[in-house]
Image (cartoon, rainbow, N blue to C red):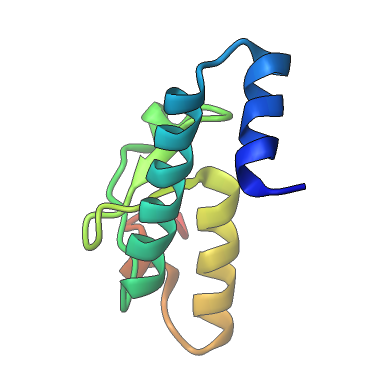
Length: 93
C-alpha cells in the first residue's frame, strides 16, 4: 500500500483529515530529527510536575520525549559512564 493510500485509509478510519494527519506525521519526523541531532539531552522539570503520559521538552534541542524514553536514555547515559544528574538534575535523589 502506498503511503498516500495509507494516509487516506487512516483518515477514513479515524475521521482525522488527510492534511492534519500529514502535519502530525511531519511534526513527528521533525521531533525525531531534533532528538537525533542532539549531542546530550537535558531536562529540568520539578518532580512534582511529573505525571504518567506527560511528555517533556529537551532544553538543548527542543525535542519532546516521554518519561519512559527519558528514563531509558538516562540508563544508557549512566551505563556509558555519565551521571544521571547531568541529564535531569535531582534524578538520583
